[in-house]
Image (tube, rainbow, N blue to C red; front, side, top):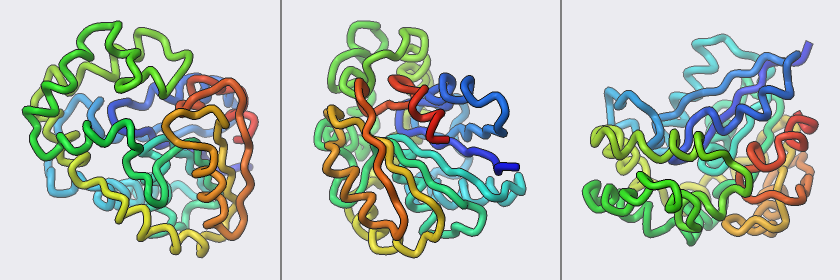
Length: 250
């Protein structure tokens, strides 16, 4: 029997990113981890661990705590970066890796979102930057979610965009994580990915506006065994725009 599928989301979204994929996999054990990346509702107890390495270590710990084995690990956006860090740190429980558009190599974060991540050093400024997300039209601007997804519903946009505005401690969690993101992290992990012995599938839309398709092919080349599945009619959030394609890969 196939092992469980574990899903990792990115910054300023939550596990509902995967709802449409999970609904298409009724016969598989699906584990959606809720990560403290800005759309969480309970502040973290130890903000010192709010770094890419710290969150990746927590994910490894969750796989152990839940005794999940033969895992298919799936990541989107920053979740894909965390998945890279997980398999480089300890891949003993992971047999397959599926990455949709995500940070890699010199791209962490993508150019469009560099201002937001830089503001993580000053949480009050980050809060001011995010303030327009209280209003529906702003959530679909390119600097928000407009160039990340074609089809997300208004309810999920509202759910993703408001926790950090309601609770300043949640925003401080997100800011601390954002300030710790750097291309040095993804460049450092890149040569370590070849040691991963499992199957790797890179699911990437050619028309992605934040993570170019060339990045997906370069990421695939870092692994010993990887193939690229190009997805039509989608932006970065393949789980929302083309859940049918992603579910078929899984």
